[in-house]
Length: 138
Image 1 (cartoon, rainbow, N blue to C red):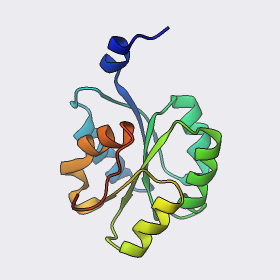
Image 2 (image 1 turned 60 degrees about the horizontal axis):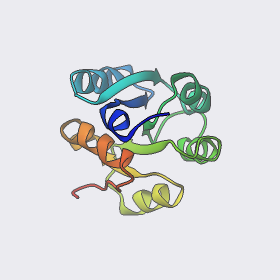
Image 3 (image 1 turned 90 degrees about the vertical axis):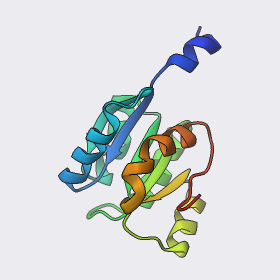
Image 4 (image 1 turned 120 degrees about the horizontal axis):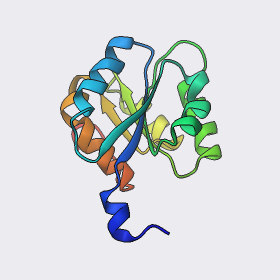
């Protein structure tokens, strides 16, 4: 049985999903020295999402919203149904209020615009893990 003290000391298990290897490497560089955050997996497509969540036992998924292949929003919906405890932080190049609203309605816990994401990434991961909503500029 996990005590409250043990749960507080546990690292947040993060899966990064982005079709650009450079972005995945940047996420890894930004997060590797962050206390309390552990990158447990990297994936390059939404097709791999559920398999990777299960294999990595991820708690937070940083998910690129525009990738070729399977629609990431649909993949997120299915993954949330299969793994209801997993939180999703959407990463996007677009600061479009309509898109932000759509992904939040689909079950995302937060939304970061990639231009600011690297400065805010670690804290945003911590916030979505605590069930706080993360939005651009807030």
